[in-house]
Length: 135
Image (spheres, rainbow, N blue to C red):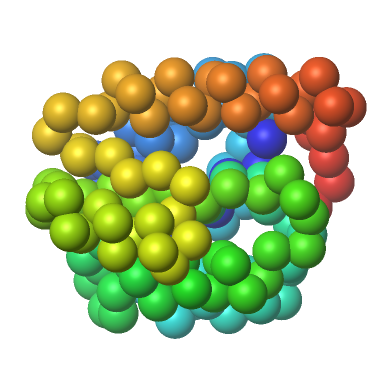
């Protein structure tokens, strides 16, 4: 499973990268702390990722802009995008879903759910023969 990780907190980046790397076939193909580099990469590599994990607030730009680009750039039917935030009010989650997020996770309370989601998606992709797909 090829993961785009858009997160500005270095400790969270490292933790998520370790989680992805621990999955069978899991690898991070992009780490970005800001929206623009992620948006540009997604536009240039529409079939180079399976899951985008996007923080809402970034060093520069906003995770909602990255989510929009994920939806525009999706070239494969299995691609998923999820949003993370410490600002997890109901309306924020609804807005993320409206922009195309498959799931919304509260960083403070839902990280175990995010890990379970990643494991499930990785297993699903492996079952479809997408594990380790070239980028």
